[in-house]
Amino acid sequence: MDKQFWMINRWIRFHLIVFFCVGLCTLLGCNTDNRSSADDEIPRTSESQLNKPELEASHTLCRLFWQDGDAGTICAADLCSTENGFVARVLSVAGLKQLDVEQNAFAQMQIVGKSLIVSVRDNSDGSEGSGWLVIDTGVEEENHGDHSHWYYTRSPKLQSETIDASHGNPAHVYRYGQRVYVAQDKSNGFSMIEFNNGLTSDKFFEGGGGHITIAALKGQIAYASWIDRTGENAGRIDVVDLKGNGVKPKYSFQLPSGGIHGATACGNRVFFAPSDGVYWVDCDYDFEKSNDTVKLNHLSLGDKENSGYRTGSFESFANHVLCIANCKGSSPAVCAIDGTTPSPKVSRYICEDIEPSQRLSTLRAVTVNGKPYAIAFAESKDLQDQLLVFALDQNGDRKFDDLKLIKSIDIGNSKVEGHSGHHGIDFIHERNDAVITNPGDGTLQILDMNEWKISKTLPVNGQPTRILTLGGIQ
Image 1 (cartoon, rainbow, N blue to C red):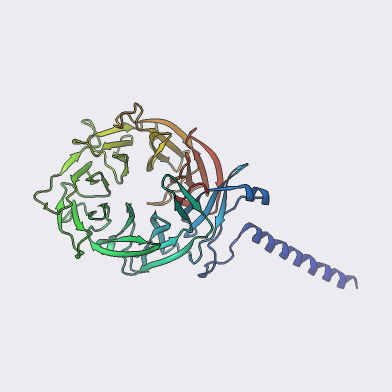
Image 2 (image 1 turned 180 degrees about the vertical axis):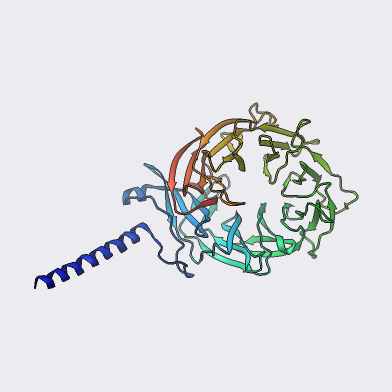
């Protein structure tokens, strides 16, 4: 009898423990499936616990979308303000399946209207399956002219998937106006994606090659670069008519140096980042130029003592082109080019105070209380990562020739491996706040741009990297 009672008691205790563990996993939002079906949720991030009164009193500030490099997912959350500060209410993206992180990875992404476009690469030069996803963000804007009302009543969902062996392993994704351009490196071309009432259409154009960068203007003309450092395609730029019936370039021209790894438009000019400084040309809307007649204009990112500075990407902002410039054996610099003046010139700030093991990344620009600022990250595997704040126009003359580092802020860690694992940042509409990702810590941080300090750290799962925000105060 005692033995039978002992066995029954042990059985009851075992099932109570199992019931408790299952309930705890459910409460914390754990996902026990390795791969979700079309109707499953993506793995949830950690969610701040809110009681019912707090939840009802909270105000949605924006919707967040970030890439989780560990899990191969796009995560989503509504960032809310409560009496106790910021909280992230985690959402699922219906229909979104995890990537096989051994085979595929997300690359750059952009938002147009209520659609999020994210490129997908594979580790087999696109032969296994690459392309892009379009996600319906679920955010609705009601425009009232001088302001908008924002609604977050719908959850995000996968809208379309364009992934196969013929889409060229895209990396760079650009937004110019209301169009998105996806560079298809292995196809030596790019797709222009247009949006109409929530629907998308895309058209492929030949132009660029290897590792393509694109500058497009007014939906009429695009300049696409070739990455080659030597050979017949070194320094090559293809000029493409986006309005015509054809898909081949109208003409091509060559820069004196190759290795082009950046392109952008500013005003009616196009800027390129080859291995030697920056080149710019006037936009040829009428396609009247040729390789022999295009006027090439060169800008050095260095000085007489050190002309070896180069950049790999641009940020176009307030009639200026901004970039990070690096030179072996020298401190990195943040550069500003007055892109619309008759004779553009480069203004530099040499970051002499950062350590040799720190690298600058992810340059973004923003206006705070009517003043322009640039933000970059100083990343290192051994030292504390920092967010650097640069005042671009201290004297208010709009020339950006007095840019200066004004603040260094300790933040969470990066987890840099190749081109991935960098910090990400995006800004909250109608507020002087930004959201930062820390891939090495698995956290998001809220940056108060009035005080230039971190006001909140939100733990999330995985490795948060690139991030975008959408919407304004509900």
